[in-house]
Image (tube, rainbow, N blue to C red; front, side, top):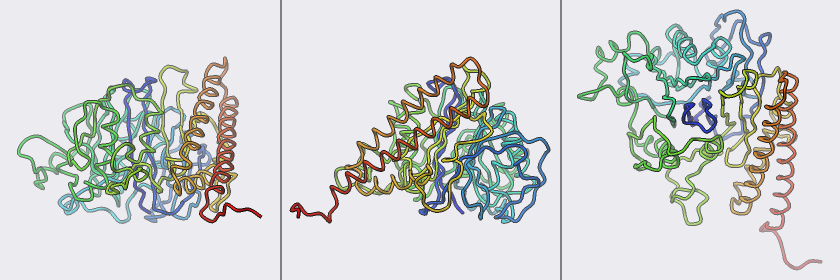
Length: 459
């Protein structure tokens, strides 16, 4: 089951709140593939772990940490935990499907019975207390078991963000994102300049020798890992690169580039500090105010794959705050369904359970659950974007301002018990579901008045 996504990372000095932030749209195929939002308590962590895709059983360490996750509602194909924050305020998002090339795969082939996106979060997040530790644990697993796909993975703690990419079947590399920078990863190989001697770079121990022995570096000078391990295909020009271009031109006023450029930067600096609202806009974007907007007023050039798309299953923005007590540092922002039509909610991660309307998603349509009502709203909204746009924007704004108010009120309470945080999460979920239900009611009423099957003369 291939999941194609978009990832944005924000260093603590680049974010509006001084937080480290790792964010990703989890995208699937064109079907709905319902998602859940859960807390995995230590007693619920599998031991040993069994991979459905690989039919591989792996023993796990004792004493796992508690963590949040957004698994598939139907476990037939595995857990697919996607992203979460553990009880030590360490976050992980896995994975961003990336590209490679035939030269690399010819010398380190993918491992059919190895590990993959289905497995990574469950195998790593409950056992790490820092972002760097996440890289090292996953690197060890890759070297031992191999992987059947090429992936990018991000880790964060309150100080650092590390981004990791897998190479062939058994190799890997990772880079620390600078505190004053952001990064954008759109389904292609992303890491460029790399220094094996830097404390901000990690890699398989034999990687320099692997590159030299197999004559993988095409450049006369320097070490650009995208040129070595990545791709530069026609598909990249239309499916991947335009997403990076749109993010850069939104965040960096000095950015110069074209949507199809093959060497767009992975790491860049923004003109202003980056907010969660900025990330929500970008992860919902469809090339607004460009000729490439599928919802544009003129006939659009539908050449480029947008970030906001029907394949969005869920979107998580994992924020680790630095100016608050440990108990409330982790915020698991979450929205379900196609991101252009939903609203983000800032759930506290330091809890033992999640609201039922987010947790108990059934595999068939039921608008009493946030996943399904979000899907229905997206389907209606996409049918006539201009008609429903104002309704949707008002919904998103109403939800955001109210859940932020609830969050601030909770933050300022004298005691921050798990019960208080759980109640706050429930209140935010209840409010968001109620607003989504109101939006659905309003959309049906407006849509009914604008159906093609209508007639102006009454009985």
